[in-house]
Image 1 (tube, one colour):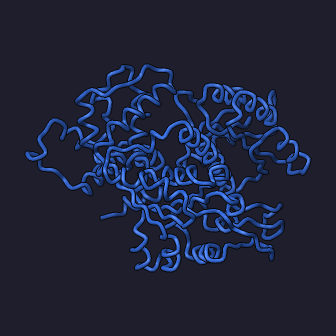
Image 2 (cartoon, helix red, strand yellow; image 1 turned 180 degrees about the vertical axis):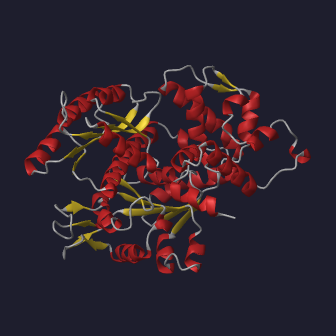
Amino acid sequence: MSRTGSVDVVVVDDEKEMALVLRDLLEAEGIRAEATTDPRQALLRVREGKARVVLSDVNMPGMSGLDLVRETRRVDNSVPVLLITAFATLEAAMEAVRAGAYHYLTKPVQADDLLLWVRRALDEVRVRSELADLKGSDESLHSLNHSMQKILSQVPRLAQLSGTVLVSGESGTGKERVARALHFRSHRADKPFVPVNCGAIPENLIESELFGHEEGAFTGAVRTQEGLFEVAGQGTLFLDEIGELPLSMQAKLLRVLQEGRFRRIGSRKELEFGARVVAATNRDLAEEVRGGRFREDLYYRLNVIPVQLPPLRERTEDVLPLAQRFLERQSQRAGLPPRRLAKEAQGLLLSHPWPGNIRELGNAMERVVAFADHEILQPEDFSFLPVESARLVGQNPLETDWPTLEELEKRYVGKVMEKTAGQRAKACEILGIDPKTLYRKLREP
């Protein structure tokens, strides 16, 4: 098991082949994973702060999965542990819950079910981290850009309203940050904030994920399960990538928004829905409506309070402050002296189009901190950025034959695909975009 950097998931199974299979399944979905046959190695990664989630078999020699759960909670109780076992009994499930397991899966594990729970655990870790950031400081919501300042100045007022909000903007522009700000500045701040990535949940599971189901409602429904509409309670339900929601689910969502009630699958009992809905999209929903891919009535129901976030290339005055903040944070986490940008490196960052926006910028700063062994960062430390950015540094914009932003983005995506040998999961990580967005960009003429 490599221990060179942080990972999303450490997979533990005393059968090496099974550990590798699960690792490859996760990595194929863009989830950074490591595999080990030794639970103590996984525990070491937790102790180092280099693992966000642990996925473990139960029956292992030396240290069982239940022991690993207990030890992980003792070392860092913020790291969820998912257990996998071949023995599906109520007693075993209860023991796992008492030990503090995040969830309990039985063999043979369905890939969709496994990915759903891993993503849910990762989302919860991210929620806690970002909540700590938001509670600790409003720095993430500062901007020198006039358009962004105007949007952020409206957040406190919009937070006190109850109308549905539709946040639009390219991937990585901070849509979820704004959604969280709306929640934590409202009277709902002490209630749940429940994020849902509508594009990440398989179509055959999304209704159950949102509405929940009763035991026996369908094959595989071995117990009653609350849906995320129910979990949200009187808090905020954040529907990210709402444009990816299937048309069949759009009609059901519209009914919930209009009537404020829903039913679990397999139940006749209606439940009240009292959460505020904040939706987000990187698509032009008006165009999706014209193309028949999104319901017009749902679009107008969601677009009560529209918020349009500008891309980072239109916020160039924010690039360097954000980059420096990311560098300071990553340096601190790595136990290193703060990294700083040389003037030439600053010019490089300013000339880059950042198609992945703030997410890409953050990923780039994390990468450079991981590999640079000196405090003052030079342009060569950013060699993974496209040639176009380096070529433009130090040139007068009026004397340069500038390509269009679309051309720059297309070249950059192509360069990243070339450097990663066509590995889409790795390319998504570098670009700071999700797999569906990458797929669309690759298909564009």
